[in-house]
Image 1: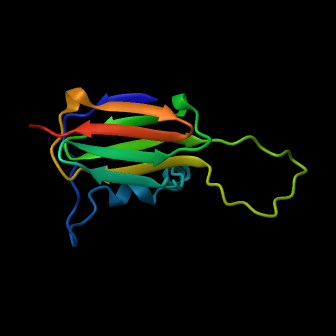
Image 2: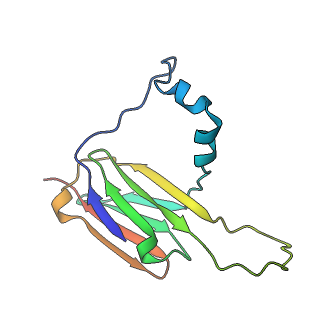
Length: 133
């Protein structure tokens, strides 16, 4: 697990605004670079002193994901790659998402980035985000 604090805010475009990079996605070679991402399940709760986040990352190695803290949100992204069943295997059910994932969680309060704690155990990422005084 890699953790980094990002010191700039993200911005969202308003409805009706033109997408500034619309022409860039018209090239077929760029579209091939894009891959679909799935979103892991996540819980967020708030107490008087902290925000607690739990993300379900079953089957993901600790070195295969990154936690990014923004001023207004928390982003967890990475890749889950499960072992294959072999070339001759026939799947009868395939419900476990694999590949790139990303979960973005807007923070409901200002936090103290110097006291953030994260731990990864039994496939669950637990992040404690203490609130600013």
